[in-house]
Length: 309
Image (cartoon, rainbow, N blue to C red; front, top):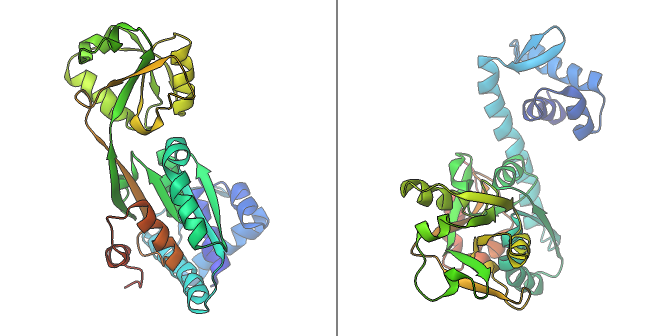
């Protein structure tokens, strides 16, 4: 068997058993993918996939165990390439970061600027998406690191590091009743239409949990992934905004006031994740340390088990 055959099996499981998609990803033909899968099954003497006619419908029980081995083999093959580049003294490369809009817009610019000054030969590729897709990008090797507030700690095959803590703030038009100086309450907020993040984004779960625990219903009239969009609609008078503290930009949206909300909602922790067992280039670790300076190189290397085993 060869790596291309193993990639066909891995991608078939990732692509919902749609061999046309697998063929497109691997730049081959659908019959070629089917042949490669069958050749491995014949060599092992085990059926990896369940079938309905010629269509793949799922993994067999032996197939689930075999897929875990294939994932490890392909990860180690990627590790070998990364180690070769590292030991050959290759300074260049591409660091792919999967993250949310909030992190890319408000937190990463200074970190990326400092990183580029240190590693001018390394390209940065930012992939902005939802926390769920960010995890998938890192797990599949499409991204070297993932950065998000929600969801990254839920995956066993990811190692995630807590990086920094932040709170939500309330954003209202100047002169709004909530901007009068008296600390806002959840009941106060529940009396206004709300504008905040989509479910699963930027600490939204803590907002929902706080109102639920207080037995309060809310009227969320608009949701968005983008803090700028939320502030724009608040400025139009559509409702009260709940956004990440680092996203407040008074100079951009004049006429808005910010009201403290850290007493209302649980603090949020932004995390950075990498694949468990992945070989990290030295510059990748330097980027991690730039984003989370409280970590040490030894701590990061030990956590991801970069040498395998």
